[in-house]
Amino acid sequence: MAAARLAAGNFFYTMNISSNAHFGLSAFSDQAGTSATSYWPTTTASCDPAWLHGGSNNFPVPLVNLDKSKSNFDDVNDALNGKGAILPLRPTGKTNIADSLQSALNELTDAAKYRPRAKRAIILFTDGVPNEPGGSSAAAESAAFAKASLANSKGIPIYTIGLSQNATIKPKEDAFLGDNKGGSGKGIAFISGNNAIYVSVTKSADLNKAFQTIARSLVVLQ
Image (cartoon, rainbow, N blue to C red; front, side, top):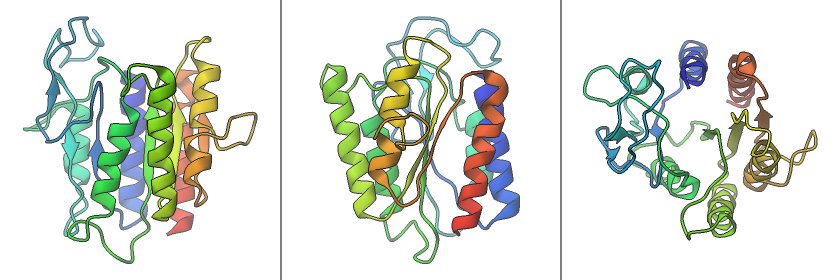
């Protein structure tokens, strides 16, 4: 998790200095967060013991709203590092990707929040496959694919990064998140279209490269 936080932070930094990007963040567990201080209270397993802000309950799932008037770089960075009022990201609970994608789409289609001439995009990074909502993997995947189809209709690509290092989960992740290239499936990136790509990460050392690949693609598309 520490490597993922660092790589994500480098991605936001790269986008912030190389483009006029405005950022939002929708963290998720059993459901997506609804505010900067949202948390999921039912997880009892210890979280990322190497992380200074780790704990055994009240795990943060912050939402940082998109803002037409400012980049929100500092707020998103705070969410990654656990500074200020925004609670830090941590691994916890289940995986409700559909809810988080809907949250992101709500931000990107709200005329009061997005800039009309700006390139809109979602970057989804996860270390697993969905298991909520619906109580089964099939129902959860179907719900997420429906959100990807909605993104496609709005002209919003969903770039995906698969972070799992688990040999059992990895093939499922490649199928679910894929762009139908490099052996991946017709997953979230493929369904969302609009030049979205999927980057599969097989070792933590490649995390930074994955985020930077997407950063370069986004800068070119602006």
